[in-house]
Image (tube, rainbow, N blue to C red; front, top):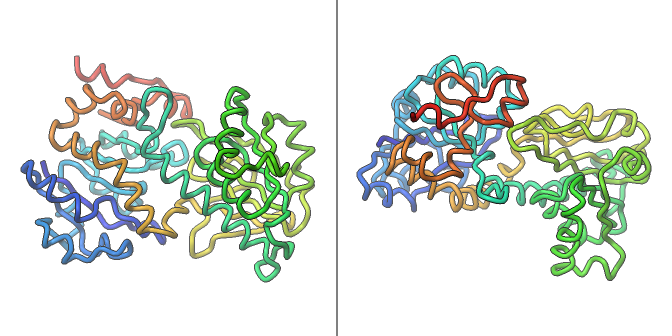
Length: 372
């Protein structure tokens, strides 16, 4: 199989989907790897690093995109749509519920698109999304602390002693809570699933002994709790997730208006549309905007700030699936690996992921119907 690794062109996206150390494994199994010139540079890998392990490095986008399997980090940009075709298998973060135009083109061109974010193991574990969520959660607290500084338009306070609310107790939420607790903040986690509350507390207790210092509260995410808590916040972190769907708008504009001037919102859920009203995607170049005196940080590819760390963490989870797709082909791989099957969002011009179909209000066509 021919595997293509394009250079990421989303603004300030510095990660790469394949690093040199994994290429010999693919080469031994007879696969050809085409890497676009400069693809790994921002993550610390030169073109020579790829060439010396047998990859073909090309400065021609068309050569790379003509591969059978394209692996990326972020969703294709508009200038890349011209490379879509029916026999293309695309494996990357897609978050299609937030990108209706991209979804429409993928369907029109009958691309087989597998979303890293919806590859799902039994029990609802999202193995590829997990490390990126953890990194984003940690960065959310760092950025929140930065924009609370007076020089950056904030209240002029340290996170030590500040009041932090985290919406969602998943991987991103727990990682954010851990960093915030470590910095001395008072942390509230709001999690809709009350059965998770004790697990969240236990996980954080083991590492931070947070309860002993009365620094952590886990409560149900309902409107009354939100209205009461939001008024006293310094930092609000949105970390909700509905697999394949748009993030629910949990915090309203009216709630934001009650926050003190100079408070900060970091909406990690922005790659799925954002869970806070008025959230709009921003970039690393222009990361923030203000509404009602509150600073919004809504960068949709936060882990790109630390590309070397993020790239290596991503490959630890993606490579086994990349290898399986290459060695077995799409049909066999998705038939034998249920996690990959769940990752498929579009195929043959239809939506094959139930959550994504729900997001767009269209019929869900199970992938298995293609293999009868």
